[in-house]
Length: 109
Image (cartoon, rainbow, N blue to C red; front, side, top):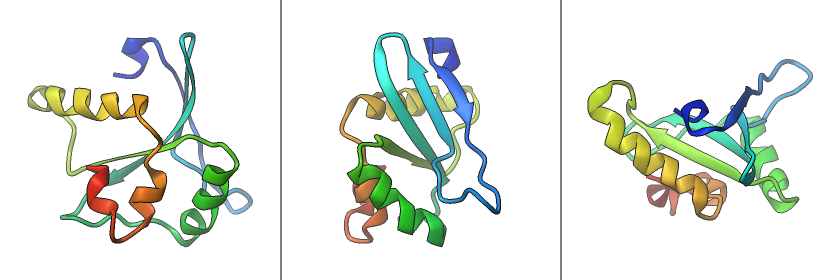
């Protein structure tokens, strides 16, 4: 969907030497660079790795715009409206710090 809207999408893969990075880096000719962490939501909780809990606040504080996109399942035609709603979040303030805080995680969805 992002590529269909003109975004260049790069998957960021962690390994034993590189961990705690968001899943995707996206760029567009008309917008600034963004980083996306995708999560499968189970109820009202999100699970982050220890490396993400350690690194995301540092990356956020130093200017990385990290957006957490979380949902049970966004596949299929009937989820198109929900995908558009999630896409619209990329034009708001980065929500990574809300997602990391157990008291505000519900505002990510």
